[in-house]
Amino acid sequence: MVVYYFGDDITSKKDVILKEPITVRLSGEITPTVNQEGGDNSDGSSAILGLIVIIAIIFTVYTIFNKAVKTIKNILQR
Image 1 (tube, rainbow, N blue to C red):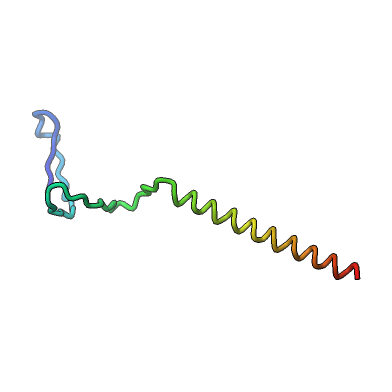
Image 2: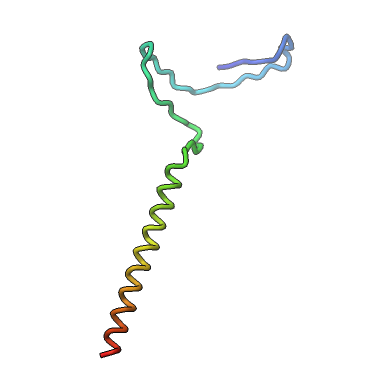
């Protein structure tokens, strides 16, 4: 349970019950933190990866479509 207030005015106190995991680690040991609020802390790499995938799909569809058009033209010219 956490009770906090500002200055000496204890009448404005707020009390909140927090459920926070406590991890004990050795001095100098680096551990990743976990965001429990579900917020997005992305550095943009997933957005860039998504954009690359979309461009690759568009390029693939374009290539297949052009190949199909050329094949149909060759068939019709015979």
